[in-house]
Image 1: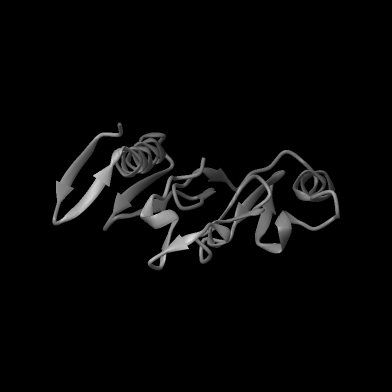
Image 2 (image 1 turned 135 degrees about the vertical axis):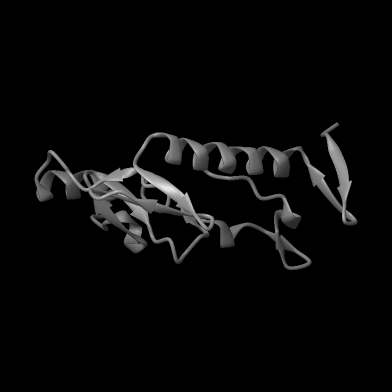
Length: 127
């Protein structure tokens, strides 16, 4: 039986708490690594770094062709058409929070909904 607690009339189950702690840990690691600082709830990256958590270096030791070849799917589409390629890794569009995966191939909107909530509100962070 999952751990639950009451908060403002809504159940927070283990998955919600796990997701919150995971996001908190990732955020803190991004700041602790020394590539940016947290200001008003957002990371402000140092020069030479970018990304929501300042986790991407602007430097890349591969050619554009090498990088693109690692970001293309079997059908030749770069990052499933839903992101950009940097140094051989897909960076999914931040405006589309529901897109994830190594090739930006996952769309959380494909999950079943109940009462307008994806998976009845049990959302788990993707790594």
